[in-house]
Image 1 (cartoon, rainbow, N blue to C red):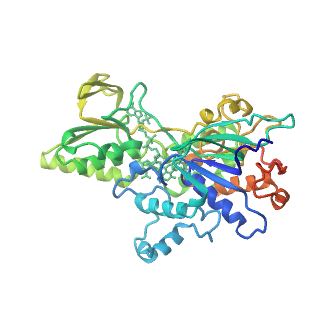
Image 2: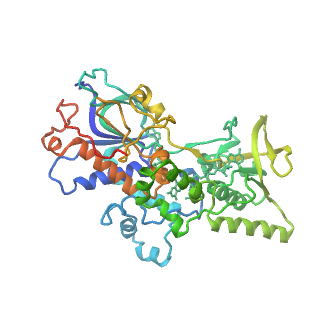
Length: 455
Ligand code: FDA
Ligand code: NAP
């Protein structure tokens, strides 16, 4: 086996909540075991831990209960729970007095940073994984490790991995044909762009979309730019409420993953048809009520600067010097017209995580279904061609196989626990106990066995 580079049992690509939760699950698995823990490393392209930093708007709250933190659903005794964080921060009693299940996003970010700091020795920040490749010396007996090309400020290095957990997150989506620039922003870059712009230059701003991001940004701009005209371009008649009522919320329960995964096409279709409104193109009731009240107050005062263009979509954004011009079309009268603004925020959502670019040539070893989607085992491991003995696990990008929770926090603790179990099983207890400090580099044969989890 090739030994020219550092090698690991597990390499995590991306260190957001999903892989952070995996790091916790792996650590807790070995906390009481006598065997050597797997050698794991995580690469994160950001210079430090950050969770959707550009959307940490004041007063915004989490959309899941704090009990759906990085660990509690898998291990209620975990020292990485949100409650443990509050205890350490000396805020447990005060948090409880709030009588809310939903912390602010800023506080949850503090929690995630606190948890991430426990893994500083296993995370490389400012490190972008550019490609996963086959080792140059793959023998006829099969492929038992992979090479990852990692770019850092000091150059590109190569590391080896027996298992890879890809968790690179959602991909911002702009309206078709619209490119970002200094005054055309996606919501995922909002606070950074806003912070770099002189508010006096923002007399007319537009926000595109009718999801949670759009509603929160509209409220923020209305609040922060008291001199500005704020126009919200929304494709629906009005904002729709995010259904988080108890029965509907059960689609995010861990058990729903089995029902989705092992269900028929009709079962899966029903999940989306009836429950898409738990998450996509919907807004929390509190934000809807707030925006409506603002709009109504302006009507009463006669000083109107918050505008809603409903049943309207953005078709194009044109730049002419300093001018930013939106081409919008209305379903109300079928008319198209132009709207000139100083900046536009496209809160137009995200595409699922797509690992194909990272997989490069390896992609041909990953099996796909008739619709061209990756085949994914119940343990989130890609189904690969015979002889491919490495594990490639997906945290995200599995909506087609595992359902609505695939990109969300709701099931993170359980999902990463299942992945950790699968990795542990594939390494094999006996292999670990006998392995030297660096099993791949040392050329030791670490047993692999498949986990029973096919559909
Ligand atoms: P996440 O996107 O958080 O992390 C991926 C990481 O990978 C990033 O840090 C990125 O820098 C890194 N990365 C990407 N490519 C890389 C590469 N090639 N090499 C190295 N690193 C790379 N869900 C929910 O259940 N409740 C909620 O309240 C919210 N709130 C929320 C707010 C906002 C504004 C958004 C946009 C989304 C949410 N979500 C959510 C959904 C969201 O997907 C979820 O909160 C987590 O971010 C998912 O965590 P991940 O670690 O999977 O992705
Ligand atoms: P989203 O829910 O996918 O909403 C995107 C919106 O943009 C939709 O209303 C969509 O309309 C609209 N849109 C797309 N193209 C358009 C066009 N050309 N013209 C007009 N409108 C257009 O995206 P999101 O709001 O960013 O939410 C993404 C995820 O992040 C969700 O899980 C959400 O819950 C989460 N989030 C959470 C918080 C929080 O925790 N506080 C904050 C923000 C986001 P169509 O429906 O017609 O496509």
